[in-house]
Length: 609
Image 1 (cartoon, one colour):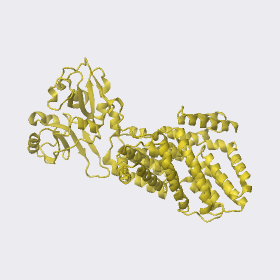
Image 2 (image 1 turned 90 degrees about the horizontal axis):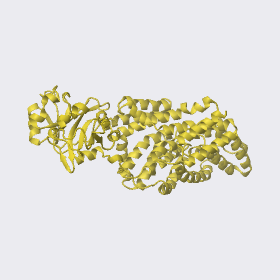
Image 3 (image 1 turned 60 degrees about the horizontal axis):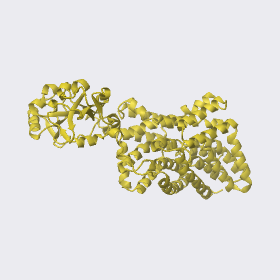
Image 4 (image 1 turned 45 degrees about the vertical axis):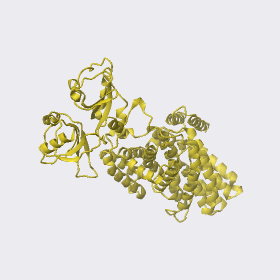
């Protein structure tokens, strides 16, 4: 018992101190309990196989797909229309939408779905996401109190109540108390989030290493001027011919910047492929070709090959498979004074030079014959893989910024309908429980990967925040230690026993705050399992209705905000919001205490003794 209490104290101190990562602290505490013989190895590892933890991993992938496909931006834009540019209105929109979804989907699932949406919305509005993400986690827990399926503690007390021979609790028995939670919590979080989480404007303009966005590169080099998009009919004379064979630059003075090919027969499973022009690239019927040149030259080309002019003011704004990057020629570089044609960028490096910036002059015509000088900045175009290999020769040039980091921000927006369909199917499965929730989430995660919502499997794995996963998995076995050493039953029984003579309301308060304190150290589900039978026995001893006591357990277990690891939603938003343990104490602790007082006073009104 002493070792367990010391371990809890160690974890609490280091969580607050913040000098060690939270997941490392949790792992050290877990190892101390195992090595000290308090819990067994299977018990220590049980958290890593827990369905909640596995579900978190799947939800990170689903959330990543929502972000990757631009669905987060689309939904965020809709929320922005409701919230306008007012941080206050945006805050209310986030709280309301999250609480509503949380009433029907697990709070973990709600946060994983809403997190990328809120991050996109915050970036678009120029407000730091930290202002919204902790309230987002809290709103999911409060919204979960509105229905029977909103959170596991609700199901636990419903089962205990029914096992005692009472009529089953209905789906919306929880609605009055849940609505009070959402309204009171929102009103309290308005000042708390403003005081402690509003740390200024978004740092959208902060860029590392001089990086520019792809849109800024297009605008700076004026790539859309003289840009035309043409489509290739089946009977066009250009079909099945290679770009090298066509020799359009010599014959028409026109450059091909991009060839785009899409499967138009499947709107949901649509696949778009982009190709940087190479001599060996073959044109197919149905392709869209982006051309750069003068209008008369492009019109001659279109007429000669039977092409269809789609747009004479095309925009380069999609970068799914190919991208742009700047490289600067170094002093004494081996390529200095050589022309672009002599260097052979396309053949040697798989990229095309499409513009040169020399001091304040931008060169876009006859690039092949331009001799390069030290200090020239070359705008190159190619596949992201080819661009990633450009930094292999730093003596010749240096890649400006972090083009691959920009590539990671490019959304596969043509996959947004598919990601939306998968998300809706997952939510329906979670609500109606066609399959276990963890299986529904894992199926959704696999579908997003297999259907191309990620560039590759590695991209999907990168979306998983392992710090949050390890933190929750390592803290879950703490319930075994508290139960095996008798700490849980000792504290609960002593508190309830000492207050029993004062009447039902003090006992109700004791049960609520005992549950609330225990949830700081073990999961809310485990706390509800431990405290629900004690609440039932306490009500029987006082000869009053057990319903308000059971509701005190579920509200105390779910409305726990003062710790990042008391509920999975709290842990999910911690890295994205860049929160410290003290942030949860400053915002969550007063919220938890005030909400506790409100619920203790209202529960006997909603569910009389």
